[in-house]
Length: 252
Image 1: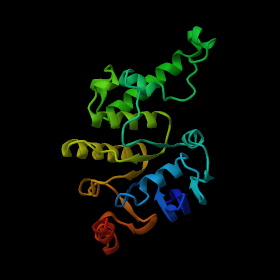
Image 2: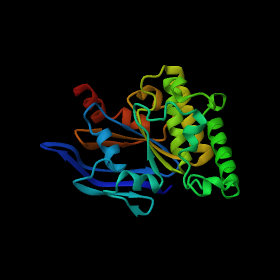
Image 3: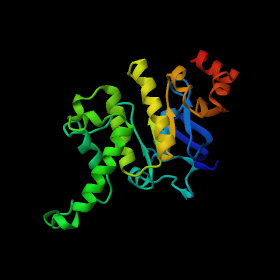
Image 4: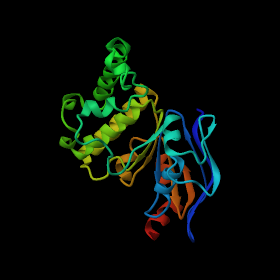
């Protein structure tokens, strides 16, 4: 299996704090990979740097066959790499369906002139709605398509944010604690949905998550960080039982 994301010797400092200290890791195409580590280990900094919110001080980020090191977030997003946030960033007053439709790229009906000529955009709008309906079904949100997003539960909002990223055509998702703050039953459902997205869409995911007891049951690979360095990589259970990982959590 080839890698879709490759991080090489990535470094990022904030003043005298070295948040990332020569981080190197790969995310294999079509896999669910988890990024773990105690608070302050550099997980979110890594996600922010890969997705363009921070510029690295050193190292490279390769996505597919492109060197995207230091790209602005909108360029990274346009290349097919999208991220979600621990607190969902959605349009709360739009409906669930509308949240997906606004993320579809190149909508031909959005221009002022073309918007008045239905024949130029009707087919594309219909295809966009069909695509959105398929994603809502995959994410178990079909029954909520006409609800305003603020009426969803916290877990459903996280799924909606994932759906919006997929609507943009992303093939790699960086998820920042997708089951944070949701009950265990819904947390399992969310991870089951992520597995379904991997299987049915060929999606690749890199997931930052603290609820290791739940996540480890669903993911294919794991990387552990501590003090800005990768301390273990491999199968989830191997990484979780690694002495260095256990010491990092106990020490934190």
